[in-house]
Image (cartoon, rainbow, N blue to C red; front, side, top):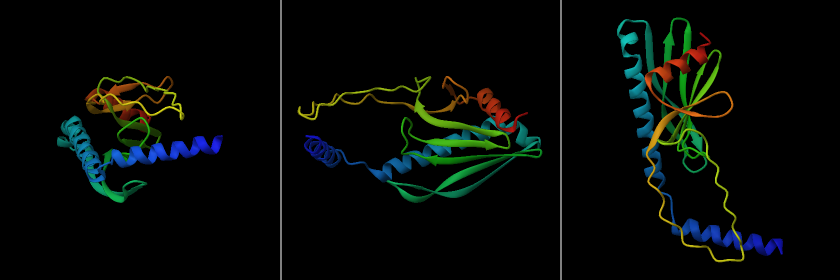
Length: 178
C-alpha cells in the first residue's frame, strides 16, 4: 500500500512540475533586484553618517550556491562604524517561508532580513491534507504578494518588522551589542 501511495505522489509531483515550470532566470533577476533595493535603502538610512565620515559602506560580490540556481554572484555590503564591522550577506532566494534572506552579522550576533508579504507580521503555517486516492483539485489563482524586506525579531515569538530606518539602526545596534 505505501509503495502505491508513493508512486501516486511521485506521478502527481512530476505532472505539477511539468505543468508549472519555474522561470529560474526571472526568479534570479527578481532576487538580485530586491537585493539592490535593500542596499539602496540602507545607503539612504545611513547617508547622514556617511556624509560626516562616521560610517563607511563598502560593496562587493560573493558567490553563493543554491540547488536550483547553482553558483552565482550576489552583491554584499559591509558597514564600518568605528571599530565595528557589520556585513550583509545574502543567503538565498529558494527558501521555505520567504522569497529571500540576507544575514546582518556583527561581532555580537546576527539578525535576519527576509523578503516577506508586506502585510505579514509573523510566520504563517498552512497545512493541507492531500488524499493520494483522490484526484487533485483545481487550484484557485494565487493571491498577488507584495514582497518587501522585513527584519526578523531575534527573540521568541518570531515577529517581522518593516525595514525602516529606526528598525534597521536598532538591528545594527543589536549585532554590534552597543
